[in-house]
Image (tube, rainbow, N blue to C red; front, side, top):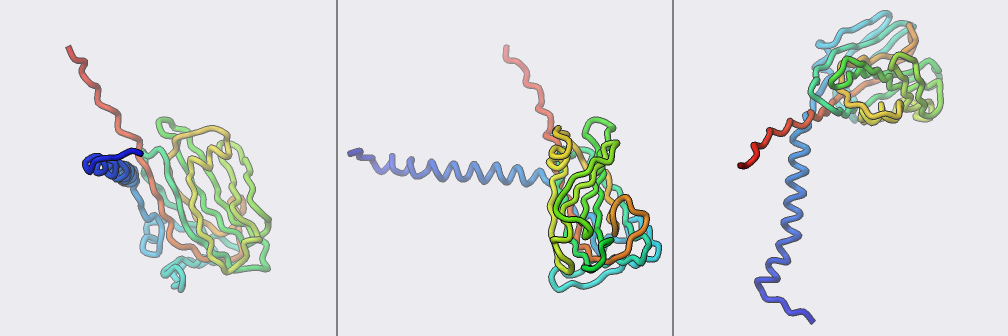
Length: 227
């Protein structure tokens, strides 16, 4: 039987507490390096370029998400586009919520396009995140020239329901290409319909688009060699 003095017991109890404090410190340091930004909501709609033909884009109030955007087209175009600056980021998480209204319209679709640049080069990738009521399940399609369609959901998701999305663009690009790239967002386009379609017929709601970017770690300063 081991017998410990009071001083030894205090030291033993202090070890788990020190480990917990260390973990909390590392978690705080990691989270403090990440910057969250609201890119699109009702208040920031004016900052976006709008392409609207036979369409309406207007604010609405939703009992779940509060102020949201309502997009509607009658065989026209409803698209919002804006650039984004995060040149020092090596990863980014993009999150949003959307809801389609039509259940009998197979043309009903929502697309959020993310253009991203490879950090340290001029290479540009494009991912069209798609909700397509005319298809089933998830799917990835290579459109060529570093452009891809990533169908997140089909008609199984159902209309008039909110679906929250959270995507790590670097992880998605690695899943698509089989390679790891450090990428940062360059811009976004939100539109009703599929990315290849010139016209769409349908309507839906879109809530806040948020981006969480993590910058590249600062380069360590050289340490002078001791004599």
